[in-house]
Image (cartoon, rainbow over all chains, first blue to last red; front, side):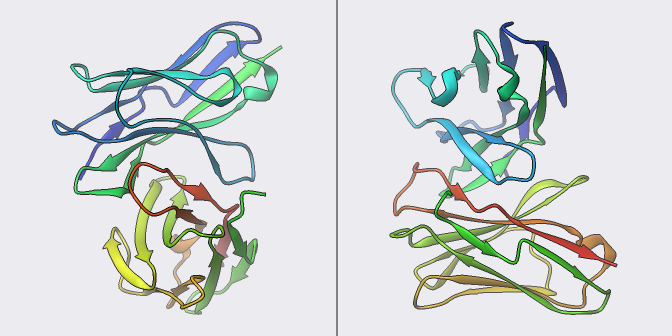
Length: 114
Length: 113
């Protein structure tokens, strides 16, 4: 099974500051990579995904992520966060033998302070 | 509204009981996935159905079962419930093919007392 590691369980940041949420995965073969966001009492929403091609992927709400094959990482970034970005963020990796089966990281709670 | 409908939103039941969670996928999506989200285990893949057939199984207990019906809605049956089964159960659907990602429902919060 895939292993997905989100190194930070919680990230506090002030409004308008930049943020990076880290994600590392364990796979030596090609996989698909995703970031999802979960607001309180809601389901997960897709932020962005990497399938192939350019290693810098842009998503919704100003988020972007960079795929680094050599470091098996897919870190999520936003140059300037807003209070409304306060949520939990999950990194997900597809199973290399079943691309529609995902493994999720344990989540990072982003807390944006005024 | 994501297009994936889960009912009920909340469920409180006693240990030893059986419950059924229902999911209607987004229009046009043939695949349905069930996930369990708990504080200690995080998001765990339970099972995948594609057009009525089971496609993949994850960490699903033998006390749990699921099916997908001809109209593509899916049900997750949980029996002989234990306190540890208390969790959020999510259903997700996806379009055919790889790499589309999931569309999640808002979940069913199950509390076993």
